[in-house]
Every structure is written in C-alpha cells, then in structure tokens.
Amino acid sequence: MHKEYPMIITKDLSEAEVFNKYLKTVYHLEADYLETKSTNCGNNIIYLLELLKQHSIHFKSILLCQDATMQHRMEAGLRKYIEEDVTIINYAVYKATVITQDEELAFSTDIYGMWDVNKYVELLMGEIPRLSDNSDGYGPNGKNFICHIEIPYEVRQAFEYLKNAYGVAIREANPLYASK
Image 1 (cartoon, one colour):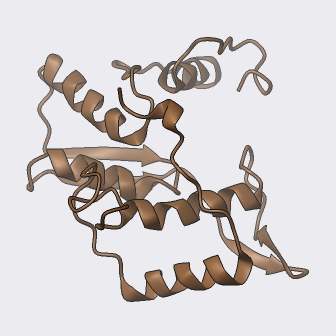
Image 2 (image 1 turned 90 degrees about the vertical axis):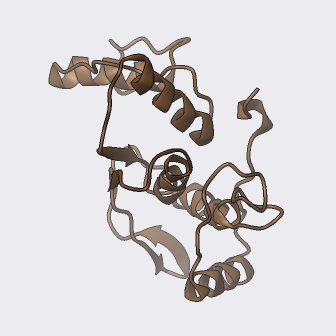
C-alpha cells in the first residue's frame, strides 16, 4: 500500500487501519468502527462480533467483503457464532480466472495488485484442507474454528488432481499469526 500510495503511512498499522487510510485518501470515506486486533480469519470474526456487541449493533444481515480465496472460510467462521436466521452476503472483491497459457498457469486478465499466479494457486489450494471437517481441518471434527462445510465430491477430485498434476504448494498456516 505504501509503495502505491506513499502518502499513506502503514508502519505498525493493522490491515483494517491501512485499508481505512486508503478509503480516506482515495475516496474520502472512513469506517465508523474498525476491528484492529485480529491476526487471522478466525479471530477476525470473533473480534468483529465483540465490536458489534460492544456498540450494541444488532443485525439480521451482514456483508462479508473478503479476498476471494478466503471468502467461504470467513463465512463458515461467522456461521459458527451467529444465529441461523442471519443472512450472510458474500462479496469477493475481485474475480480471478486461472487458465493455462503456454503450458503454465496464468490469470485470464490482469488484476491490479494481485499476487503472482503461483501464490494465488497456493492460497486456493490451502483452503480445501482448512475447510475440511476432519482431524487436520478447521471444522468441528478438527480444530473447530468453523462450522461444518460439505465439500462437494467434484471439488475434492479437482483438488487432488491439481495437487498431483501441478505439484503446487499448499499454503500452511503461519504460526506467527495463530490466536494467542
């Protein structure tokens, strides 16, 4: 962010604070409330719900704007803690299509500020193990960070195919950002 907008000082700021400075600088908008303590998707949800409760904000719907790679997991984390009748509206902030080009993975179109395609695929591939409801996953039968997610058979097949065909790395959770 600081590279693209040198006037925005980012040192020692949370992602929420950096994004808020971006909104203010570029669009002259500012968030009413910011959750600034989280270090991962799971505690982002927990701290968000605490912030809403602290300010007596009751809701029947909520809009989740998130990176497309983590969108489903964020919803599953939120779904674990809220009432069933709350409507969750998912909005991925970009749409990326990965294709093969000259026998290499590539994006079908350029997306400003996007990771390189290998990092993006690594992030995507890391989501299936996280969404899984088994001893290694984040579901109730694993780490219990999210509600149960039913991963369609076709998605599991595609995951295994990509893992074997491309030998892509699968993003592991970084222990530096684990909840304390």
